Image (cartoon, rainbow, N blue to C red; front, side, top):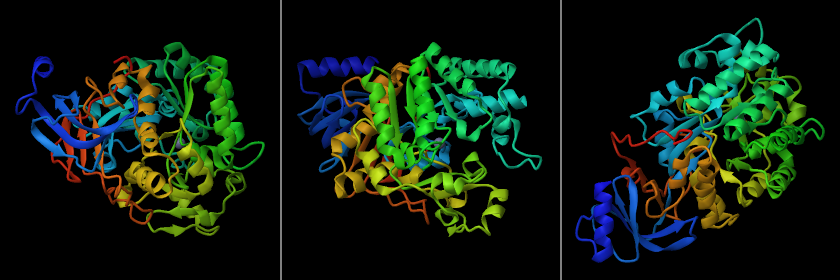
Amino acid sequence: MKRLVWVLALSACAAPGPSSFDLVIANGRVIDPESNLDQVRHLGIVGDSIAAISEAPLAGSDTIDASGLVVTPGFIDLHSHSVAADGQRWQVRDGVTTALELEEGTFPVADWLARLEGKSLINFGVTAGHIPGRIATYQGVTTLADAESCRGRGEDPSGPPAWSDGATTAERLAALEKTLEAGLDAGGLGIGFEVNEAPGSSREEILTLFRIAKRRDVPIFAHLRYMGVDPIHGSMAGAQEVLANAVATGASTHFVHLGSSSSIYARAVVEMIEGARARGLDVTGEVYPYTAASTGIQTGLFDGDWRARLGIDFSDVEWPPTGERLSERTFPAVRRQGGSVIIHVMKEENVDFLVGRPGVMIASDAMPLPGGKGHPRGVGTFARVLGRYVRDKKTLTLPDAVAKMTLLPARRLEVVAPSMARKGRLKVGADADVTVFDPATVIDRATFANPEQASAGIPFVVVGGTVVVRRGELVAGAAPGRAIKRGQ
Ligand SMILES: [Zn+2]
């Protein structure tokens, strides 16, 4: 802090001398979605904060020449299930400086945060999770390792586990409530739920999650109970359950992965969200820029007549270890075995609509890549939007895309975590989380066949003032990532 004061005092009376700043990002086209700045500027960083944004050149101990490049706030991913070192090394080269596990969440929150503390490449945070909370309360689990090992749904030959299909009772609901409140007290950024994976959850149980969220002034991160093309029991029904709870309680509510959630009803679901906002409710949503979804083959999504429900067939389901499309013959064995599958389920026009729609944020839904196989969204989401949707398809402008990746997700969390008001912006005093990319070449390279290919055209990424990607390469040993917690 002392050094920051010195620099500011100096810059007030004279041009800063050599090495006034720890890091200078020079000559870049600086885009700040909060002030709408979009000009060539020089960024001066001292410690972990932005200390100057200047029209005149600055001198620093370290300088990145960003001539011809775009300089933006680091991308904030509200939806990542791949926050371990393995996932972060891909996400950071996609420009992500903060990746948060908000949909699934965890239990216990403190243990989850402790696992990354001091070892994290990028910033991290988590919600109190409904499913982890159910695992804890329905199955008597107390540790993070045990909670994670119980997560599989199909392992028990005697049928689905209690956490998933067990019916709500008053006693269990009271215990679940305590578990979730403890998660919020430990720094949880809200309440995440995937009710589709816990079909035993009553309507009252889900309403209770919203009540807790309102009481504690934290957001809900909602996966729909119903998804798919059915005009009565499909995505519209799922969205209406969430919105009814949001309206009835007033809880801040965020719809995860609207592409897969809204199915063929993308426009109608977005109109409902916008309608709720127009009536004063705090309701938002996000999308990842792919027409394929991914989830565990043992989840409730594949229960019952899923082909009719989702409007797809066996051949739309891809098995990542081999890349083969499933058939009526091969599906049962793969479901018994378990693992994540890729589901070619979305229509391009709906994804294009969501990516371009003002207010809809970009978030990856990153998942781990066991054996180097799986959905590429955790590796290429942000570069894909900038390259494919902004540059090639002109679905949206560059400043609008940047806002969807930075300012909007920061604002989503400011109510619960005041520190987010220093992220998602480039201004003096903001955290020095910065992404530098080439608008002419930025593109995702991760594919369904080979997802482990880092995005191109993102040469520099800075987290809390520390350069973590330099000339497109990871800087060895960097671990500047910090926890984002409720109330801080
Ligand atoms: Zn989900």
